[in-house]
Image (tube, rainbow, N blue to C red):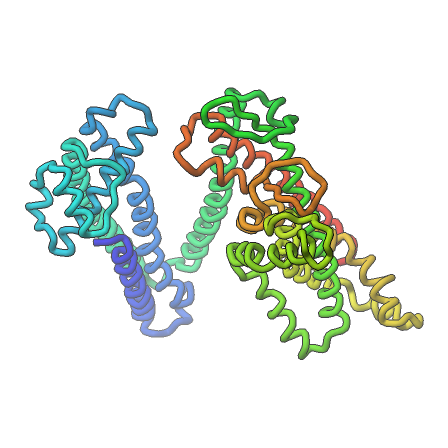
Length: 490
């Protein structure tokens, strides 16, 4: 049984337990709720929680651990690479899992019977043909060891899934029955439910923190590996970015940082004035009817996928700029040789950032106390003078924080840069030349058939760590400014 069906059955048991627990609580006092310690809903929620939470937690843990256990049990069967490198073993085990999934699919679709899948011989051509019929692609020929390991993996996986179904449903039933038997008029159901919810909330917070910690530690460990192989001084102060997977690479980050900051500055030069003016209009001048229409329409820009912005930059903005600034263009200056350039990516990224600036600035401007506006107007100032001399100075720290948050978003953008700015790592002041950014090179360094232990692949983690530190610093600075503003004006 699939994990989805198990979860649905557990939730159905929890729903039934809620009804049963509530009825049992009411029955214990003859229907008079005043004699219960807690509201009837708490008794039902206690049974539902005891049925669902332990079972679902066990299900998640089982789904995480089962593949690890199966890999450890099946890996010794691959004798040819059992003592090899971890990367080679990982590739072989990927093929083993694909063959096992293909055998399952073949049985489900009637291409093979269960006995045929279990006893199938290791003719590579026959195995490939069978798996091809069910849409499974392999990266290499199927050896006898791989097929035998896949059959063993399939058998163990089937046994594990059956055992998981039995154990998880048994835990759900045991929890529901235990909680139901504990339900009576004096049972402190509200206390138990509230304590359980508190534990769940603490667990969710800890999960988020541990996830962040895991990401940071993975970056740190791989960055340390990179600096053990490549000099840190050449990385931080090198003026050339020229990776070569055959050796002799120049991995200076300065050209990438320059491209990242250049594109981000152009994007902010577009987004900040438009977004700020839009926020001032919506908060100070627009009627409620116009605001109700314009604000959601403006925020639609934030919901457009970045790949769409990238295609817009590649197919529309780039050719438009070439028609104006290219050779033979309207301006006749010949500055732009192709559609991919810093200006192309910066303009489109600025459009993408407009809702970030406008929404945050609008909320901050609306947070300025109305008494400040009334006092300015009462002293004879006009509406525009009030906005310029009272509202904007009061909201300025918050607006600066919004701009810094938008800047961190611009620094981390990838798809618009890949499609709109090009892939050339260079130090140049010409905004109509192709350049690239840190995020674009992270993608390029981790794609392909590079050795994952080489400096050319590990440099992606050093780039990611550098970008993480920069954006973290911007976010901390922005939040500090916003908090200072709130303390001053609330």
